[in-house]
Image 1 (cartoon, rainbow, N blue to C red):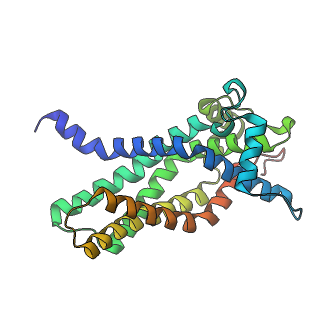
Image 2: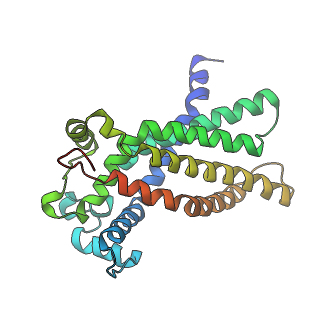
Image 3: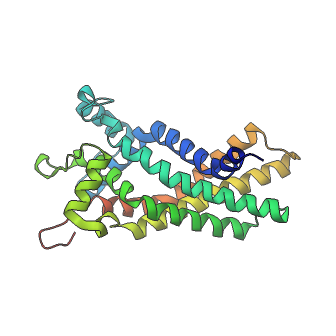
Length: 256
């Protein structure tokens, strides 16, 4: 086996994970932006009644910024997309790639599928590792998406993900880059567990039900849809907490 084959065989899960996460993030970015805006509006509204319909919020973003912003300055629905893609390159690359490596090791060495408890343990572990490393980029993404909801004088006006990371480090120090890491990591563990366990279990059960010995594209799509619904239901409470913490500003006395 050539060195290139060994290299590709080892790093393929990480590269594929990063690529798939980046494509998904680019496609889903407008919906994610609407979600963050709704979460911010719900918090700032207090007891006041506001329209939190995703269609209304999307129309509002389009009206104020356009699809890609005026001459792509504000980027509209895609504000912070560089943070989103960089986050997925790191986070998805690690959580999906590392899980695949652990799964393949069991399959190759022990000639069996992962048990249900192993799927949960490995998915929780890989989700936590990926989230800890990607937390600073996650913070910059949330702040990008939250900026337009702030009064003009309070907006951070980050230029790009690297400017955001540099500003956070300058103003809040190294610890500031990992603010909110606990709820973010817990959320990532919930996402990864419900995603990977849901996908693998659904796929295996569908194959068993249909009497199929090999995966097909239809089986994968069905399992993906089931796991996607599971992720959305499980992760929403953690997502709300994460958004509120990561968008906070440091006060003059050092508290948030």
